[in-house]
Amino acid sequence: MCRAVYPGSFDPITNGHLDIIRRGCTLFDHITIGVLSNEQKSPLFTVAERIEMIRQVTEPLAEAAGTRIEAESFDGLLVDFAKRKRANCIVRGLRAVSDYEYELQMAQMNRHMQPDIETVFLMSADTYSFVSSRLIKEIFFLGRSVGQFVPPIVEARLQAKARQRQSAPERA
Ligand code: PNS
Image (cartoon, rainbow, N blue to C red):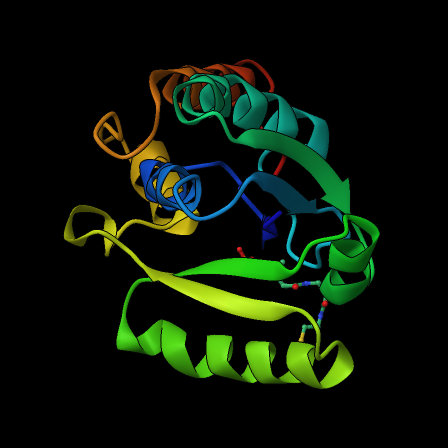
């Protein structure tokens, strides 16, 4: 039984993440999507909102692939979470060479701490190699459509956040 943890901030989940999960379904029997909850940066979506979106958009994938997919928050070390989930792999997507250095360092440190858990990198599809949650939020709030890059549910949630901001603008 191959069990994987796919960790990240997922603020919010994008089509690039979904592509990695879809392809992960061909490799793993069970995938836990781990949403980091103790982030330094202030996220747009709460952990509960991110998990809810992930659950909604991954449900059809799990049904189609016959893979068990779950989404949970975690704090503390990723390797400890992976161990609790009885995972033998950590999955990460690699977009560009610029991702590589950081990912290599993390994978090596994680292997040092937990040698029995292997990090598996999946290369992003060309279509999503430039997509990140950070850029999605930036271009959305600067007025462009992000419909090609996120599932419709996520786009609707971004629109709801924008409406919230309009009705209660932050004080300068
Ligand atoms: O999507 P992100 O923000 O690039 O995900 C980063 C994440 C969650 C994978 C990374 O920050 C992480 O693993 N955090 C948990 C704390 C931890 O284990 N730190 C040591 C890493 S070697």
